Image 1: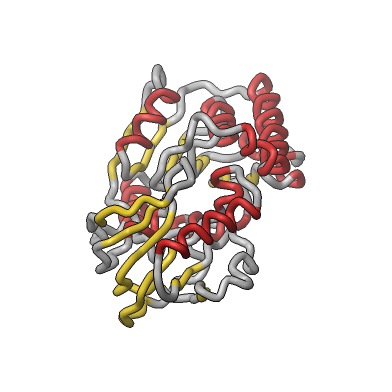
Image 2: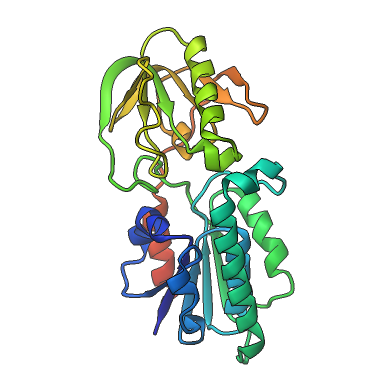
Length: 291
């Protein structure tokens, strides 16, 4: 087996991996027991692809260092992981945390049995310095490590299940949704209260594009919100928490951003560069390294 891709679940594979890995490869999913409890595919792989810096990803990296020739680490999220989360996060994400712990245990057990001679070649593709700094601490002391900075991804294409249309219609407000229950470790009732508190700050209709991991009925009964499939570039106001889609080339000059304190802060919006093509760059680099 030439390639092994390490992902959280099949949805992550669909959102990120399939855009870049066109090769036939095997997959290891941290949140699928049928993947975790099969034979250790790391020993058969020549190259392992890792898509984040979550605790089980680090465990996968430590096993891959002992088993494969190449490790490719790619940044798929703009915002760094929070090192400290409230205790409610673990209760809200109880099933996910349990699956991660099982996967981490499985990968740790595989390390003493792994046998390989030379250190692997490690390529870390990143588009924020924070992500580079995070992985530098885990690769310290390893010999063949390269950090390659890339342009940020086009947020309307990368990480989406189906590429959305871009509407040029002028609208009042566009809300960039996130599954705040899992992101912040809050209940559905608390998330609904945050959404209602945003509605009280904005007069008029609010269009919202659901996040791929959000419940489809989240906005049921909230007449001020209208769920749409497109991205509305010319919204007067945009709102959201930390989604990369907030970096899209909206014409809005005003933004309501949710703070970790639970408050919606009104702030001017700074436009970001959306001219890069992260996916194409990654493919070119992989070709240059003969992977």
